[in-house]
Each structure stands twice: as C-alpha cells, then as structure tokens.
Amino acid sequence: MIDLRSDTVTKPTEEMRKAMFESEVGDDVYGDDPTVNKLEELGSEFFGKEASLFVPSGTFANQLAILTWTNPGNEIILGDSCHIFQHEAGAPGLISSVNTSQIPSSNGVLKVDEISKRVRSKDIHHPKTTLICTENAHSSGNVLTIEESKDIYEFAKSKNIPVHTDGARFINAAVSLGVETRDLAQYSDSINLCLSKGLCAPIGSLLIGEKDFIDKARFYRKILGGGMRQVGVIASAGIVALTKMSQRLYIDHENASYLGKELSKIDGVSVNFENLKINMIFYNIDNEIISDSDFHNKLHKQGVLINPTDNGSGRLVTHNGISREDIDTFVALVKDILSN
Ligand SMILES: Cc1ncc(COP(=O)(O)O)c(C=O)c1O
Image 1: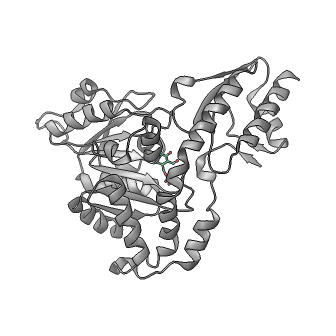
Image 2: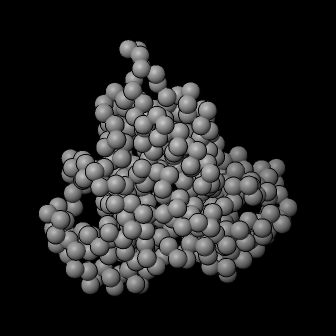
Image 3: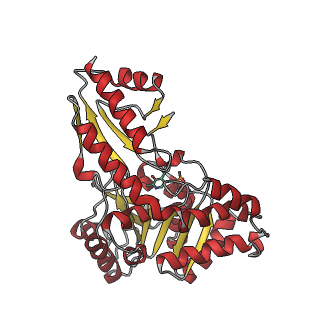
C-alpha cells in the first residue's frame, strides 16, 4: 500500500529494531535505565534546554505540561484549531481542571494583541492565566517563524506566563525555516517532541524544558501512570529517531513539495501552496467531477490509502515510507481517476 494518511503510520527502521534488540535497560522509575537516560540527555542537548522526560505519547506530553504549569481553576490561552484543544478529548478540563481561552486561528499564528486581550486581569471574577500554548509546526501545515515565536514569548515573559509548544513536528518546523532546532526552541519554556511521527520511532515523545520544570513533570508523570520500567527497549528507537531520522526530514519536505506541484497540474485538483511548508499537502478535488467517497474508494482499490476528503478537501502526508516512485504512481492514479 501507498499510505499517505499521516506520518504516524511510519514503521521502525531496521536500525531501530536492532537498537531495540540490543538495548541496555534498567528500571526507569529508579532512574536506572541507561538508554532512557541517554535519550533524555540527547533531547535536552538537541533543544538547548536543561532536561527532558520520555513519555508514552504526544498527548501525554502536552497534558503533562499543562498539569505541571497550572493549578486547578487556572486558564490557559491557545489557538482554536490546535491539537490540544481540538483533538485531545477535552483533557485540559478533565486532567488539570483548567479553563481554555481559544484564539480563532486557522494556521496556528497567535497575534500578541489577541493574546493580550485574553490575559486575565487580577479580579475576583477572573481565573488566573497561567499558560500560553502554541503549536509548531501547526497541523494546518503552517510553520510559526522565529519572529512570530519570539513575539509571543517576549509578551509572555512580560506577563510572567510560561509558553508550552506542542512541537509534535518541531524539528520539521526548524528544518522548514532553515534554523537550528535549539534556536527556535529558545522561545518555548516547554516543548512536546513526538518521536513517533516523521521520526519513525514506534512509540514515545519527549517533554523538554528546564530542570525544575522537568523534575516536577516527572512526579506528575508517575501520578498519571506514565512511569515505565525497562523502557529503554523503546527509548533506543527514540535515539535513532532523534539522531538519524531527524537528518532526513528535509526529504519528506521535498517530496511533499514535488507531490503538491505534480498534483496541481491535474484538472480538477487545487493545492494550497501557502501552507505547504513541511511534509503535508492540503488539496481540493472538484466534487462536480468525483464525489469524496468515489475518490477514496477508487484509490483504495488501487492500493493507496488516504484519509477521506471532506467536501473535496483533503490532506496528504509524506514520510519515510513514501518514495518518489510512490508519488509518481499516486499522481498517475489521481489523473486517471479524475479523467474517467
Ligand atoms: C500536532 C499534534 N500534537 C499532538 C499530537 C498527539 O500525539 P499522539 O498521537 O502521540 O498522542 C498529534 C498527533 O497526531 C499532533 O499532530
């Protein structure tokens, strides 16, 4: 199958499987797992922070960050289209008992004047604002620039509010901007990095930040049941993800760009090039030519997996399992399907 649904479908590489087999392990709740310790050190170095913590998933890392930064009854500010608000099943209310204040933003850019309006003043009627959450790269395919990140961060500092960044694809963002990961990371107090998306590890995320924050998060990770034991077996794949697979993300970006260009040459298809900055292509098919379900089913029958389009709109994602030949095959199929 050619699977263009998401980069979460990537499978561990041969090198990862070998590293997993050979990994040295210990009880990580005692701090005894050398492989986890190595991954956490590498993570903090890579991001220019003091510490990091291995957790089971991106959702776990984001929710752990919120739980660690806030107290029950506080309010957090975030974009209305971000993963934390849209796709984490209402967890901030359930786990941290915080209120959310959403800024309308389809591409993840939060303007400082909008954030400023939402920071609560000290008043008996108001919850306290204790966190600002950004998402970079954003699930719309957009990337927050260094300047946009810096503006938000400097404003947050002026109000003494920390910034957590959902950086499920943070390294993709840095690669897209052509900057070092740590240069972008300096504008976040904590970051969730997913090892299991374009970086191909089977499981796991890192929550990255300064030592005091990570020490506190380690305690809350235990409360949430995320204290894992001989988890070096998985962290070993994370080390390959961080050190090796991060170096090839630019290939996914180039492939996405190529796929977007080739797709846009087909009658009945349009591509949103404005948000084609990482490994995601947002496109439209003309529903006058083909219905969403026919398009999806015909591709499926030919061995291509895509998420169903909605009123013609869809997203494709390139990753380690997608080659140039796969893209050419896919484009030829779409051309054929739309012209028959
Ligand atoms: C932007 C973003 N944040 C967080 C997550 C959550 O990651 P996980 O599926 O590992 O919980 C995802 C998952 O796709 C995501 O795209």
